[in-house]
Amino acid sequence: MARQFSLTAQLPPISLLPAATDAAGRTGSYRSLKNAEKAFIVARVNQGNAAQVTLTPLQAQDVSGTNSKAIAAVPIWLDVDTSLSDALVAQAAAANIQLSATTKDKLVVFEITPDQALDVANGFDCIALQTSASNAGNITEAILLILGSYQQATPPSSYNN
Image (cartoon, rainbow, N blue to C red):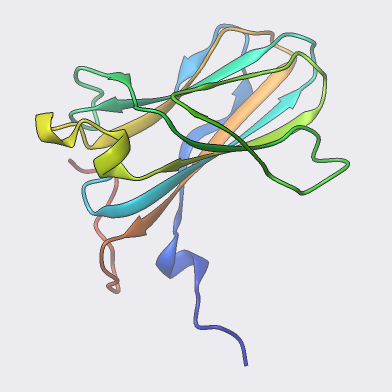
């Protein structure tokens, strides 16, 4: 018998950074983690050019990005070449990750526990992902998976403060 798990009900995927070329770097949309026990940013970098890319989760006080700043160090996993492996290898906990300049398709997962990674005491409960400037040959994208503090038919929207 299958386990009682539904991705859409328990970890609904939310667009954080739509797929696009990334020459100048960019910051995705801010999403609220107000009702989250844990969240995962899953970022993909299809590196078509040998220019490094740095991925940095940011925290803010609202979904407009008010007073954004870096998060505290969080667990990070990396698959440096998705064409060869699906293994995510633990990296040192950090507030960001700088990917190598190798032209591979890479997958990065940031594990965010809001009360540890965010400055919740000062009202920081929203996150976004920022990419560094690199090259137009590099395509980046990210989704956010939120594990809510309680299950309900219609979970609170991450688009609202």
